Amino acid sequence: MDKIRWGIIGAGSIANNFADALKKTYSGELKSIASRTSSKLEEFANKYQITKEFRFNDYDALLENENIDAVYIATPHVFHADLSI
Image 1: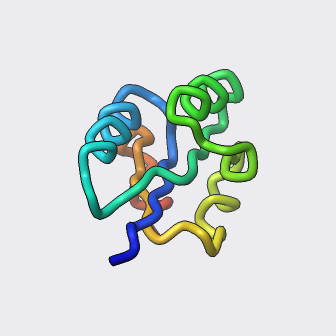
Image 2: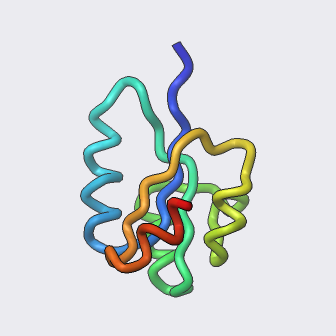
């Protein structure tokens, strides 16, 4: 069975919690991160060993990437509906 390739939008504490939990699964792998804050993006990506090609400062770029199967939205809740739609 192929692993689900996850991307995360937002690089705060909830994103870290999700990424840590994802490491314990057999069915998924963290592939990508998107954050509009460059310092958080780089810190998160380095911590979880996300390659440069899968680091985005634009949410749409992650959402449009064909190498991502599922996206976890870790932004403040007021942005969830727009990003989901």
